[in-house]
Image (cartoon, rainbow, N blue to C red):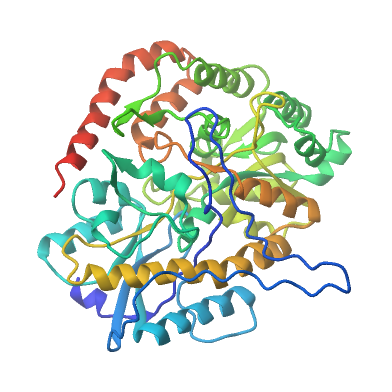
Length: 507
């Protein structure tokens, strides 16, 4: 362990501020007022351009005597490699923004950032984190961990309340997400503008613009703008696109589909993007299950079930449908299994109208010859509200519970969050996303809509193996949602109560 952590590289945390500045949500109709992060707009030709606001954290002036601030970060996981270290400016706006932010904080606080990259099979780093904590080793200051919730609720990592200089009321924090991560009014974790993987994890659709034109379908952009982008429109397009191209009487990997994805990525966003949560809070700020009487949830699940798993086959699911196209499968390392590449290759070959797209994977489509656009998940009903965008969670930075200097750690974390909003966010969102990933002005507009309305359901992210899977398994099965909810409610409620009790017993 210590030998591994001795290998130290220059670090900087690639971060994004897409989630900040949002108001408190309710389970059904969350009020999300996300800031668009666009910065100042030039006025008329004779009007000087406004200077963008600079965000400054309320932190003491400190000199940490050249302290080496260490982080462990994952590579080779579902989101790809975390590129936090940049050694010099190279002309790329994101790279240079990262470098400038890093240099600013290092100079201000007299620290040196370093990182160790660890091959992560989603949960491997959590085990490493626990081992380090139990041994009492001072191996690192921060860990970027996907299983952050269990580390905090089980007492391996410090809660926000134990990190004194984190001010989560500031605009560089995602308040609308962090409000989910309290139990008994104890603040557990804090998503801020430094968490790039939260950006990566936002789910949307890419659509093949040539197929839209060739099939004579409505313009998805106009449907979104007119508040008419609904399940009915979406599934109607998917049915129109699905075709037995080789005429063999069955739908195989040689045919065209309405949707290309994996069921575990495709299904949950339908209810989350409708503003529905399966896990909510009671009056005492305790986690409770939101199944009983949730007719809106059951109606949405039934629509998904009927349209995707009944009637014409419109969905190529790379989990069961790929066959020998996938030579390996590692349930802990989906990226290495090839599922994502199969969907992408079919989309590039014009064999799908829509593909689910975590935003961090959209750059992989830049080589596609056919033009494509980016669009949010549809609304459940016409004029039903905003186009919410589900985040699948990310590799949040957590601090070992025996950290020798939480004050120093929290000062650096706060500085990283604020300076990320100042420097990295404009480069990440405006330059990279809108000019490199998106191929038209409309897609750039859609990206604003997506990131201004990010939404999360703990039942679909943190409790994916229990709450989420109980629902999506039934979507793929018989569709008896009320019955399944009734049967599962007792065990799921017991699980949530156990989490509540664990948090309340934390020191």
